[in-house]
Length: 321
Image (cartoon, rainbow, N blue to C red):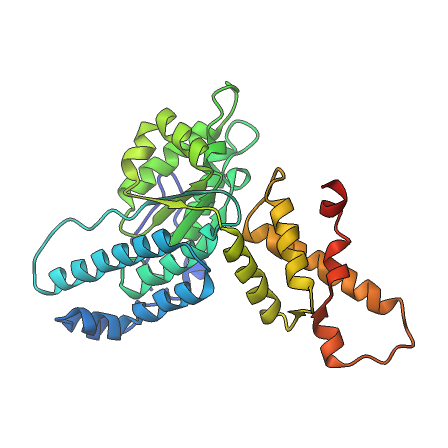
């Protein structure tokens, strides 16, 4: 098998044994190359199915979903232009996802990787999710190998860097984050045909990061802002999450959870859907403890599936209110 058509600057080419598994080919490449309409591209790639999954999987986020559809439309039309021999520079696909925790950034990145793969813009379509600790070393000579190893794993797919602004710490002159940034910049430019980088984090901190690193800003083509969820959307997420786990709110429990959310949203460190999932996990724990406390009781499926109001009202959020 021939060696991969990419190389990380300064890295050692992978051994033949490590490359024994061939990369997954883009689906239906023959049909895609012969497509002459948007419908034919969508049919051969099943991109529409990915977008529908995104709609069904994530509550709300209408602006984000619209932007993802716009990017998908750009890629579909670019593919058709290529099929007609209309040469143009490949679209820049590096992105920035800005928003608070729990707003669906990782899930959208996973779906974006699928879209890119199905349209042939990346070879594998996998997502590698990392933070500063995965890229930056603690001593001289440690950062470059760590960063290059991550880039090797991500090649052919999407590299998702969460809280990317932590790469840059100007207050510490001995910090090695700038070295990782310089390697990323070089690869984002030279290997953009085989790697898409998505930076993610809080909106204000990402803006500060870009102001301090204009080279990174210039390589990001798409900026997506992820809004916080509203109360009704969080309740929808809660009901959907419980249903997926074969639980349900008992009489009065949904109203108790709505009150819980109203209080929790005012407190620090609220993390949208992530906080909803954590609250439901604790409610399940209290339900289990409540049922466990009466070992002689004969239980049925409905009882085992029901979250009662007391399982929610026992939260210290109500005690602190």
